[in-house]
Structures are given as structure tokens and as C-alpha cells.
Length: 150
Length: 150
Image 1 (tube, helix red, strand yellow):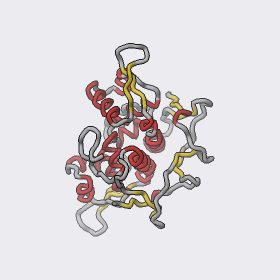
Image 2: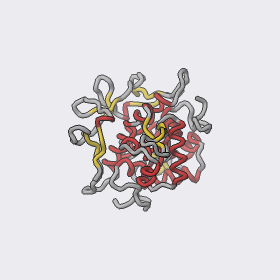
Image 3: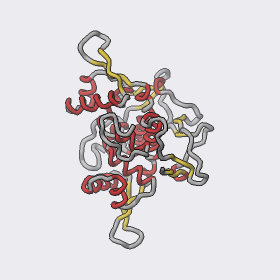
Image 4: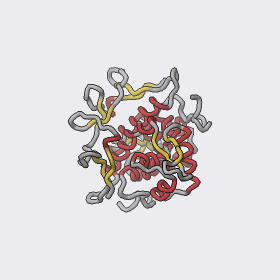
């Protein structure tokens, strides 16, 4: 891929962080993905949840479909609406949404402010703080890593 | 906190995902944070790396300092420049940068396209794929979770 699906050049072609950011690193795309994990499927639902202008929402949905994060299908009730659902690539953004959630919970709430919570869908129990670990179960400290450029 | 440090209202006050996105969910803020993890400290270095307009870069740096992700200090060489470094809250964005990196590597590169790599700073070995796990070592499947709203 020499450029994003929408024809813009990559900001930093060799950097996986930058490619993801180029594709969906904007406020509305990230919140649409969050809502899709919560089961939101319809344009009108996204619009009411996010309070975003319709033309911006339409643009971001179109982009998320173009980059393969969402699929758009005719509504199951036979109406003229579309339903947007996460593709497999889109569902793989779970970690990104979790990392946004965990940082926000730790650093963007005052004491006593209440917030939504990720819970086990079967037991209803809160999901404990998740940590990135290697396949053999070790956590990775940021200051023990560096990025090898090419 | 009834609003962001810059005085804008929260898009969705009870949602930790949305608060993080409100604070730093834009392309340039995310790439500045990435660069800060790579040891970039000076305005001019950020500017050359990112190719971003100076007024936008200045705005994003100011915001990242205001929200407590970066600190700005006089340069250690006594010059008139500032050095921007990650605060403790900023360093806690490591997971977010890792999640952007891992998704990008999996879904935004064609076969054979090369990319930068996160490696162990001591051994130089690539950091293996990281997985979010609970304190007792279990991975969490997205479709076994839901968000409990308040």
C-alpha cells in the first residue's frame, strides 16, 4: 500500500503507529468505533450518540468502510437504512479502545466522578485492569523498549 | 473535571474512552506522543519528523502540556529552546501507542512492506506481539465484554 485507501500519502510510511493514525486517528472515527463495539449500527444512532454534524459522520463512516474497519449492509428489517458493523479488522481494534478507556479512567476523571465500565457480558463483573503481556506472561516496561527504524 | 483543561465541554462526560479522545484523539497529538517515546524533545525535531505546520504543532504541544501529558522545560544546553518530555501520565500512554502500532502492523501493511519495529532496548530483540491480559493472566475476548453505562 503506497498510500491510504482514500488516496492520501502516508505521513510516515514505515511506521505502523503513523499508518493507523492516518487511517483512523481522529476523534469521530475513534468514537464511531467505540460505538460499534457497543452495538450501534445505524447512522441516526451514531448521530444522536455523538452529536456530530451529519456530513462529518457520513465522511467518517465512508472512510471506515473504505479502510475495511466497518462493513455497510442493508438493514435487516428491510428498510432503506444501512447497518454498519465491525469487520474482523475492526473487531481487532478492541485493544485500542481498551487502551483509550484505561488511560481515561486513570487520568481524566476526578475522584468521585462516575464513569461507564467494561464488564464481563455473562457475569456482569467489571473487567479488571488489563496489562499488555508477552506470550510467556511478562509485562513490558516502556523504558525497556525502543523503536528500530528502517 | 467538568470539562477539558482547555475549557471545551466533554463530548461524552461519563465515558473514559471519549475523555481520552477529547484530550488527545487527533492525528498530530498522537504522533507527538509517539515521537516523545522515541526521545524527541525539541520543537524543530517534531516539526521535521512530522512535517506539520508550526502553528498546529505549537497548539498541540501547548495542549499536551496543559493536560499533563508533556512537561516543557528549559533546554539542558542553556539555549533558549524548550525540551518536551513525557510526564508520568504521558508515559502511561505506552499501551495506546503499542495498540496503534500492533493494529497498523497487522492491517495496514502489504506483504513484503517493511516497517519500524519495537525492540528490547537492551537485547535488541523484537518485542513479541503483546496481548491484554487480566492480573491472573487470562486474555479478554471483545465479544465477552460489554460496557455498563451510568
